[in-house]
Amino acid sequence: MRGSIEIKSAEDIERMRVAGRLAAEVLRMIRPHVRPGVTTGHLDALCHAYIVEQQQAVPAPLNYRGFPRSICTSVNHQVCHGIPGDRTLKDGDILNIDITVIKDGFHGDTSKMFYIGEPSVLARRLTRVAREAMFVGIDTVRPGATLGDVGHAIQTHVERNGFSVVRDYCGHGIGREFHTEPQVLHYGVPGTRERLEPGMTFTIEPMVNAGARHVKTLRDGWTVVTKDRSLSAQWEHTVLVTEAGVEILTRCDGDDGDDDV
Ligand code: MF3
Ligand code: CO
Ligand code: CO
Image (cartoon, rainbow, N blue to C red; front, side):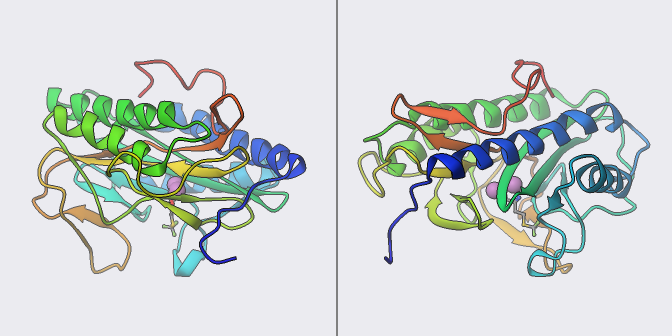
């Protein structure tokens, strides 16, 4: 039915838990490799090998609509969908790594920020506020809440801190497909849009800019950057609506500390 959001079965949910955990474990695996002097292409190669060989899973970005690598790496003023390559990370950079794996037919999608050496006070505050914004959104998820409530909570937190929310990209329903209904906007009006029910799975992945919210895509056809070249930060979890509220599917031990960047 057009306009409806899929409700996962108990079996689907169990597979979503597995895919989500695997995606989170890739972020944990890559952590010690994210250092000054390393290239984003090397990080991609490590993640690709880990997903394919250790996890026996599929890196969803590879060949997705023509994307040429297995992960997305977005540095500094890059907002999302950065293509790993020969760029060398340097002291003071901030980096988002976005991992999506497919296991047993289901997707798990998660991203986080990493500090390279010691970024500026602004870069660290932006990273923290983006992370808080994601969790403020997650905390709003429960049966009966609406996606407008979620977007409003995120937008309010970001703007109260003097930053802006990117509007051109959003979270998404996820399951057997990478991107499906609903669109999860990271801004909005309370009480509007879809009402949440147990069994729905979607991502929350706010992109937060230090300057204006406007973005553009580079000529590689993928890399999204801030128009004003201000810094941008993003965090992402895949979540399940439960009777009690929400379950984060892309968590793994040790990825929930406040200083975990
Ligand atoms: N993982 C991204 C998301 O959060 C999508 C990446 S699509 C790609 O939805 F093709 F760029 F990999
Ligand atoms: Co996503
Ligand atoms: Co993602």
